[in-house]
Image (cartoon, rainbow, N blue to C red; front, side):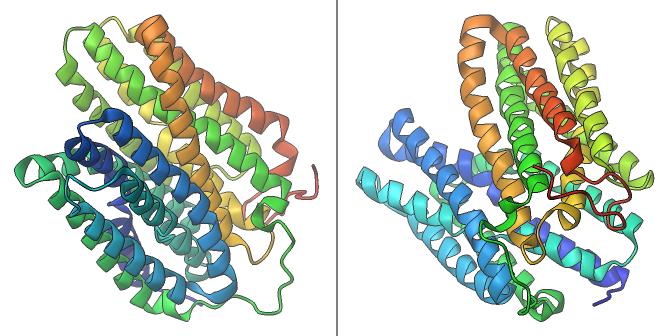
Amino acid sequence: MSATRPQVRPLLALSVLARLPLAMLSIGWLVHVEHLTGSYAMAGLVAGTLAIAQGVGGPLLGRIADRRGQTAVLVASAVVSGTVLTGGALLPASTPAPVLLGVAAVVGAAIPPVGACVRTLLPGMVADADRLRRLYTIDATVVELTWASGPPLVLLAGAVFSTGAALAGAGAVLGLATLAFAAAPASRAWRPDAELVRPAGGALRAPGMRTLVVVLVAVGALFGAFEVATTAAADALDNAAAAGPLLGLWGLGSLLGGIAASRAGGAARTGAGLVLLLTGLAAGHLLLAVAAGSLVALAATTVIAGVFIAPTLASPLAMVDAVAPAGTQTEAFAWLATATAIGASLGAAGAGAMAEAGGPVATYVLAGGAAAAAAGIALMRVRTLPAGEVGVATPAIATA
């Protein structure tokens, strides 16, 4: 189907609004459960349960949408996740731990796959390959900004009202925005091809998809490690309050990089282009280890490091149609999001230990090293990724 620019923009805007609460959930639950139980260990366990459940549920819901259409999946997941999240936020302090863990598991498993759905719709709405790449870059840039703005928003709401009210508000936005997206004509009209024979194993059957997933686990590890490293660097400079602004500058760099990439034609077109972006991502974050001793130098270098984020995240999105088996696109997009989230959790955990042992310099090296590993993996498996114009040339996806 085709769509004019005004049809695409509202759809993207709705999808971003529906995804904004996702950036609030982890820190929101962490703070709320700590307030309820007085235990950071319990709070961390609940937040971890949420992340694991989301990692399992996302690809599963994406696979169902690929087979049954988007509407039923989005409506059901919006109702379940929004209702359970809002109800869970109102639980009293005497709530047993298994109930809190159960609520987190249900919410995580039922998170609506809005991001995967909108990215599945875009190729059918935009015929021009260059414009499609630009849209993926814009989407990646804006979503990155939600992850920068979401945690401060939920913490502010928790301070002004209560942590429960903040989570309940996030649940309401999640549910209502997802229902609005599901009601959009493009989403309601999308139907899977009933005649397609989908491979056993789903999207990960394709070597190119496995390459992108592993690469994004490493990129996610950079994200998790960077946040810990920046907090440790601010503490080491006796200016703990600088951590928030530094993270904001990181988001600013991503915004600038996304704008520049969009004007230049969008995401990388080939596996080789992805390798170059990952190399730049690694170099920029390794430079932070050199700048960690000065707040001014750290701030400037943080902007530079952030420039590569949005273009890097957009590139795997633009490659999905070329590397994923036909009829598995929604699941494929969900796997990319899951991979990044898993990597971020692993990176944060590893960086916590690294910060204790080696300080911020070693932790920034860990972050940059994760991106370097991603570049190495992409280089070694570049034959599984597009070798020409994405959307025109098809990679050798049968290459193991």
